[in-house]
Every structure is written in structure tokens, then in C-alpha cells.
Image (cartoon, rainbow, N blue to C red; front, side, top):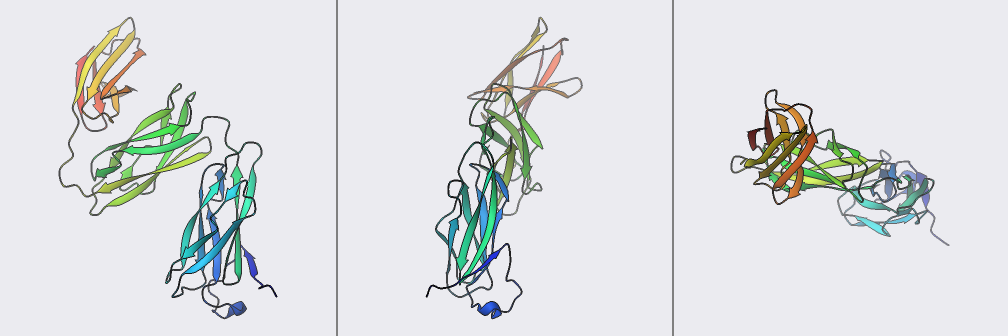
Length: 301
């Protein structure tokens, strides 16, 4: 006779005595997937939890009801003495109408189920990554974040958030200019007493990507980069600015010196070289170029 299993969808055995439903230790209490809705191609996180910790590893078998949309490993293991473990839920890129699939997990004769809604890949540019330079930074020192799309955009606004804003600060959003596939944003950090890894989440056109930045205790004070203005010229209502930084990952922004008001950000040409030109009705007379790494320089136009 085949072994029977109790199937619970979204239920939980937590709080029940170990003898409830005739269960023994090592039985599955719950299975959950977070977030509940993703864009195709974006992974989700699954979590399986036991009714009680046991003194041996517990293997939880996994399966998907629709492997054309959602895929999971054949099994995951909850270590001895632990109550739960996580596993990756992979989604397959597709176009057309949205779809869903359910994930089954079984251990100790109990099967738990949770489902994941999957939206199709958007027809516009797809956000591919968010990265940091440097990837590890001393607390109190800045860093530069970069969001990248899989193709050139017509202009995109990317929303940003930090999992620990007390340690790593990011702007609420950054803009990728039309004709570009990437954009940089400034990152601030605070002092820490121990190494701390913070996750930054970027979202655009329904696609979510994450990146991590590790902040370690500082052993020396932060060192600013050196900024030099190579050209500052206003002619025929066109303002041309060229500058350099000793940090090739810096973000250089132009400010009107008289009021310290932001004007625009220079394009990073690589190798520490930056330049841009903008239509400007009036001669600003003096401009200041500031780096997110602390350096600055002022010149007359």
C-alpha cells in the first residue's frame, strides 16, 4: 500500500503538540514563497519550516506544478537542530499573459503548498543588475552604485532602497538618460564596529534586481579624490565642461558657484575623464565640479 500524506495549502502545524495528526518530529510545518508575485526571469525565495527541530538532517522534496514557468530544486535539506531553510525559486522568462505555478514540499508525510504569480517580461528595457564600486568600503567612505539595463533605454527612472539605511544610504531614485544602458548613483556609508553587508534593491518597469555592499570598520580617515577642471567654457549659449578625477568611479556634478545649485552631471568617459555640454542661456560666470568621493574644483566660464 502506498504511503499517505497530509496536504496543507498555506496552513501551519505550529503550536500543535507533536502527536497532533499522528505526526512525528521532522514533519513539514509550512512552505512559503516571497515575494508572492515576480516578473518572469526574476527569482523568488522559498522557505520550508519544520513543526519541531530534530537531531538529524531533514530532506524536504520539492516540485513545481508548472516547470515551464517556475522551477525548484528536487529537494532541500533542513540541517539538524534547525527549524527552517531557504531555497531558490527560479522563474523562466516569457511573454504574453501572466501565469502562476505552485510549489509542493513534502517531509514526514506532510505536503505543504504555496503558489507564485509570474508576470511576463516587459516589452521595454529590462533592468539587469545593480553593482557597487568598490564592493567593500570602509565605514564613513562613499561608493558609487551603477544600475544597468540589458539594452539601451529611451530614458528610465529606477527606484532604489537600502535594507539598512542607517549604514548604507542611497537616493530614492536614479535616472538613466535616453540613449544609455546604465546610470550611476552616489552611495553614502556610516561607521560600523563590525563588517556589515547591506542589500540595495533597484526596481524599473516591474523588474526587481538586488546588489550588496559590504561596509567594514575604518582603519584610516576617508581620503577624497582630486578633481581638476580641464575646460569650462560658455559660448553661443552652450556650456562645455571637461574635468578629471583621480577616482575613475566618481560621479562628477556641476554646480552654479554663486548659489551652490545643481546644474547637471558630467558623463563618465572612462579612465577618470568626464565631460558634457548643455545649452545654457546665461553665462554662469563660475562653476564648481563636485565629486561624490569628496573632491571639488572651481573655474570661471
